[in-house]
Each structure stands twice: as structure tokens, then as C-alpha cells.
Length: 394
Ligand code: NAP
Image 1 (cartoon, rainbow, N blue to C red):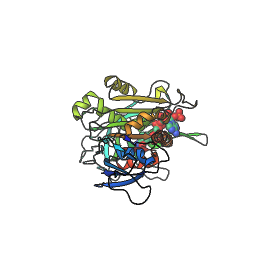
Image 2: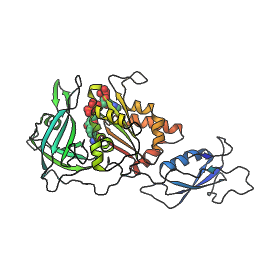
Image 3: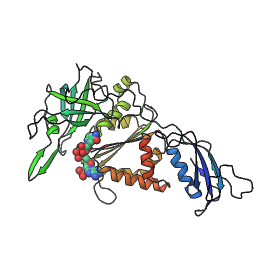
Image 4: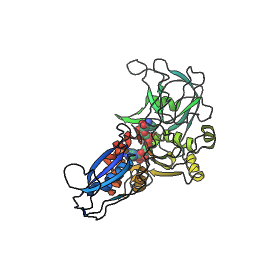
């Protein structure tokens, strides 16, 4: 929304009253609110209100620089012209995520579901670093049936005992299949697992659960708990825009969203006709480490108007300062466009993967917001409250 402010003057001390409906959506919905703002704050206030899903019903003023808000329209004796608010404010209804009927903790650690491994294969190409596998479990026969939604996680309890002779604790993994499963029969769940490996005192240590999963053979039974998680659910709105920021196996929930949006058989089953824009930013150390890359390239070819795929290949590409190309560098390069999308209340941002990407992404967003006179550190919690900023990082 653009507000004409008449005589532009940075040191202008005129004050305006902005009348807003449904300002601060989510926790503090209000019928009407009046905000007294200075001339210099006017543009950014209008943008912030639009971003929060508020609807501006009037902009009154200008009035005196201090004291009570001048609630009456501008009197004819006042020389300065009143700012004109454009008739069309941003849509007032943000695309909140539906939490209705979300399955949670159908199976708990004391009485887990015993899933059967149906397949376990590497997702990596020749020359890739490490091990990342796609592992599928049969969920048939559960009472209740273990069902889940895109964006949720399940727990895996690896066989065996820890150093103290106690059973291993569960580890959570983001689900990589849609609710219908890769076989579309609604009775499987898939994970995307990197084998954790690190050096300690000159020795290579393998992660307990990730090694258990990467090594497991079809036919083996595995203890599964959950599902859990409501942070990463997709909105129901078919017109929503979805920006996805993933590093490594953080791609798991994004794969579920993209299959739901663009995979032909999944689409015909789910009846969800996505019409918005989806933009995936994927961070990977090498091209050979890109996960589900063929599928995403195919979606981009088939749906060029709805899907964009931007890669940050850290050990093959360089950022503007000559360092490793990280996902936040790609966000910086595209920050204005991303920010313009975020100004639309139908846009959701999902971030999953390494916690280390968060500060860089914040910085990129703060720069783009500042260029528009908006304080990102004030706006981000507002987006979070409106359920449009979704983060699951480790
Ligand atoms: P990976 O294949 O090693 O790829 C990670 C990519 O991110 C690499 O290109 C890496 O670059 C880059 N990177 C490293 N530090 C970064 C930073 N500070 N900012 C931005 N990018 C950075 O990844 P991975 O081993 O699968 O790790 C993924 C992480 O996601 C794990 O920590 C895992 O626990 C987590 N994860 C979280 C969820 C969840 O939240 N639900 C689900 C799945 C996975 P270089 O290595 O070249 O420096």
C-alpha cells in the first residue's frame, strides 16, 4: 500500500492518526485501533500494518506534534494536505495454518509402534560427502493407525543400550513423505537421514541412531513414536505462497510440501490444487550431495510459474566476498523479492536444517526490511504470531 504524504519533508513534525481494523492478528485481534504516528513513521507504519494483516480504514490528520491523537478529520484551516490512503489495503486475512485434527503422540516411548523397514537407499550421487539415506517404514496393523501430516516428525528408538546399560532414548526425525506415503497407500512413512560422524580424540564416532538407521535392512522392525510437531504444518490455503529455506537433511519437510504441491499422483489423491508460488532455497556442500534434486528440477520444468528452485552449493560456489556460498547468501541476493513476497499476508516462510543459518538469514531480511523503512526485528515476531514464519533448526 502506498500513502501519499503530500509535502515530503524528512524533518516534518506533523502527526497523523491511522485507524486500523484487526491490527495485531492472532493473539490480540481488535475491532479498531487508532495509532498516532509522525510523518516520518507514516509509510513504515502503513506497511507494517499490511504485513500484520491489519486493514487501514482511514488516515486522519495532520494534527499537532504532541498530545492526544487528533481523531477528527483535518480542519479546513489547517494548511498541510492530508495523506491519502489508497482504497485497497493489503488483504486483511493472513493464511494461518490449520491445527484442526493434527495427530500427536499416537505412540509413546513406553509403547512404541513396531514399523517394518521396506526400503533403505542412498540419496547421494557419486563423489558425495558422507552418507544420507531415504528409509521407509510400513505402518500397517497399528491400533490406532499411525498417521501424520506434512511437516511433522516421528521418534525412532534405536535397538540396543547406552553406556549405562539403559535402553537408548528416542531421536526425532522430520518426516520426508506426505501423509499418503511414497507408495500413496497411506500406510508408510519415510525419513531422510544423514549418518552423524565426528572426530573425538583422534577417533571417528558414529551417531547411534543415524548409524542404526542408515545400516538397517528391509524387513527389520523398528520402534517408532509420535507423530509430533505443529510448527511446520502447511496452510490449507491453495493460494498461499511458500518460501522454503533448507540445509542438508532439513529438506525433509520441504520434500513433503513439494510432493503435495507438484507430484502428479499425490496431487490427484490429495485434491489440493496449489496455485501460489513456492520457492525453495537449498543448501548443500556439493552437487552430489543435493537431495531429491531430480524431482525438484522436474517440478520446476513442469510448473515454471509456481515453483522456483535456488541452490547454494557451499563447496563449489562462492559468495560475493569469495567465501563458501551459503543459503543466507542466496537469501541476500534475492532479499528484495523475498521481502516483497512476505508483504503479501498469504506468504509463509519455512526454515529447516542447521541452526547456524538463522543469524545470516535474519541479517539478510533486516537489510531488505530497512530499505523499506521497516524494522525486521519487530516484524519477525509479528509474522511468527501470525503463523507465517516457521522454524525448525538444530
Ligand atoms: P549437510 O549435508 O552437511 O549440508 C549442510 C549445508 O549447510 C552445507 O552446504 C554446509 O556447508 C552448510 N552450512 C554449514 N554451516 C552453515 C551456516 N552457518 N549457515 C548456512 N549454511 C551452513 O547437512 P546435514 O548434515 O544434513 O545437516 C543438516 C542439519 O539439519 C543437521 O544439523 C540436522 O540435525 C538438521 N535437521 C534438522 C531437522 C529439523 O529441524 N527438523 C530435520 C532434518 C535435519 P559446509 O559444510 O560446506 O560449510
